[in-house]
Image (cartoon, rainbow over all chains, first blue to last red):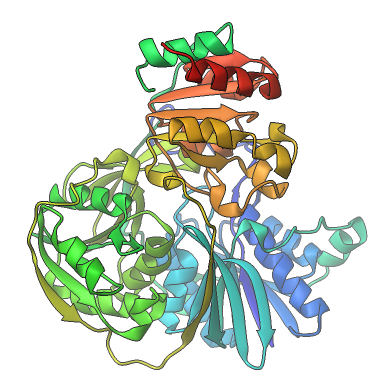
Length: 249
Length: 310
């Protein structure tokens, strides 16, 4: 069984993003970039499936600028077998990403695509569901547990108010939530080995896909800052102020 | 323009967050509501003032809110509508992007402000920035953050109910089970007061020390990601970028340091209280009232103060 794992290069989750002075976006020049944390979980899950003998090959794919190669190398160092970069300078939206991935699915014929549930830059939480829709495949989103057996995927999903389990006919789409697993750190030998693993580069046009965005970013602004209030002296003072000043209790 | 609003329900009632979505949708045009569940849910939807018609999905797949039939149903119905709207929540996040893909539309998630029929404001980077986006799609598919729109009343309307069913399609997914976290408390995303605990609670047993305070205030209980990851409470307690987004009148953060991830989920609360023994904790930068204290000493003191007369 082949597993496809899309990964996105985003501002490292430890960095606080800064809005550009001209309000056109968020500053990325000179900022540390890393693999989207949810995508690391997706890669880890795919690699574990291979280690368990369920998956035979793990293919990592990224859609973005040349430097997304680094993100793919990270996936290879974690244990993916090979990588595909779809090279574009366009900030591709989930719809465009889903169309690109659909074309890659036609080319690669995986039985399972595991994606991170959301990217921490645009916070869209959409690509996996959209790919599933375009392919007419079943989807198991926000997965905290995944079992593959007898041509089906059993997915435990994090939903409002509890955990839901669904059973999906393969091929299927799974999106990873935080508690699916704890991704490994790539070891130095594996980072070295990853350099020799194959990486193919394609253009969206090679796949016959139009990735033109549908949303125009009119402006990007800092949210209204919340000012620090006061320090109270005691629990009694706190309760008195909540009653008399804030009038919330 | 007419807007289709997917309403989410729990225990036969329409969730408050979904009534906020109705308010948001009414700024765009007339509102038709799509509901799953049994007839009582459809009846509840019909009573929401502003809902002109209720579409009740009665097929088995839609009954469990499975994404495949429900998205196909929305896509089949969408021809009559300018916008498809739902409150951000697990069901909408699962279903709406799939429906959008079927319609060849780029969805617009987590809208906090509707500027006009095409333009919307939404947070990006865990709320570190607000993006104003304009959609060129003929139809718009969006989810809205409930905290930014007042909920429509639950009673007062009298809409007609029409049954609809998802188009025939191969059955790709099956509902197996749901394990609900049991709680007598108000729902986290619509509670007036939320008491949240963090890593400072130390363990599962100590986390229960928040119960007496929440009982006195009629509050929902939340948690930081650190507390959830440490196993103190189940994951549906999590408030933050990747958990629930809340904006209650009063948010009390107990033993929470205030990571950006967490702040993204609660910084729109009206009044924020932070209790932490570390005076440098980032949570104090957003708190209206900060109490630098050992939470294990402070909690009983606050309870005593609440019990005493004003």
